[in-house]
Amino acid sequence: MRSIYAIMLAILLLATGCSDSYCPSLDKVVTVEESDFYEISLSGLKPREIDLDLMGIIGARYCDSLLVVTTLGTDRLLHLYDRHCLERKGDFFTKGRGPKELLFPLFGSSLSLDNESGSYMMRFVDRYSDRLVEVNLSESIMNKDLVLKEREFKSGEELFTALPLDGSRCFMKRMVQNGTCLERYVRNVEGTESMSQPMLKLNSCQISNNDGYNINLFSGIVGYNSSRHLIVEAMCLLNLVQVYPVEGEGGYTLCYGKTMPDIRVLEKQSPQLCTYHTGLSLNDSYFSVMYTDERASGTTKEIHGYAWDGSPLFRIPLPSNITKYDIDSKTGSLLTVDEEDHIREYSIEYLKS
Image (cartoon, rainbow, N blue to C red; front, side, top):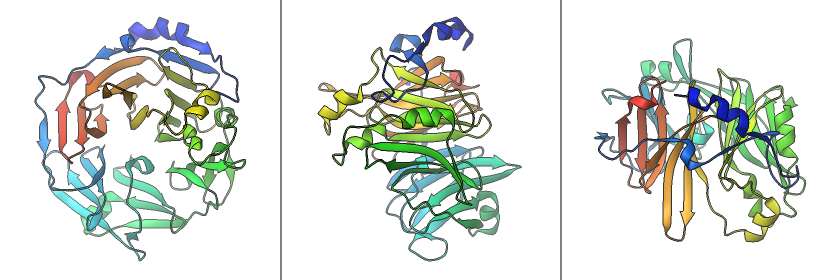
């Protein structure tokens, strides 16, 4: 389903027209419009209703045979289910400051989930206690108790993002230069830091001054594909998605629409800025983002799917009340969560890799 875009992609890869200082983009820019996607309609599809009797859902993701759900304001913050029969496999992490407790909820965008040699692993950074936490979900289910390993992970910076790449490294974004720039970097547990060439390029973009809000122009939802060693950064307040390696060179910027953003112009509109991206899902075959279009007539949401070379694949219009989603390309499953904590699962053949 990607071959028809092979020639198009070569044309769409353009050198950015923005100055380094005014447009956060890489050397290659892929411009994409609505007509470039294959549209998938949910109308007429009968979803599977998933009733977990949970409130305050802030994340729901597939991890092979598991459904991993995180919540806000419940007795437990992490909930594991068999995704097929919905058998409850365990509820973990109470609120608090003690062992196996968390002071803050687990937001899905800050978690990494991987199947490593048959064991399901979840990692996150607990910023309150400066710990890199590694949870063996498989052993936790077997033992009916958390099996985890914690390592000291002090950043000492004004962090916007902390996403584990593996058991010893994290991708991070911190505020620097008097709050006018968000700096991307990789930090390991020994405290060593590194920046790839694409990170340095994106880090060169600055706002003129920090009014307490416009630094959010550089904020984004971040994911990492461990098999491709690629970061995907869906920028929340810009119509851009950044795709780049953790090490080395390369990468590209996806621009949805014909116009690249100019930070100088957008700073003047702060804080009345539109939200563009509110979700992200990564598979080995492709990745996708939840795109939001805010207009006076109302807000529309849709999923945009891309091949890893930047080719546009599909778009899925969504009900405006959808807040979270995930896609499993192995089974062609689309998972959605709405504002009322209703979870639905759609089976879509086109989404299979």
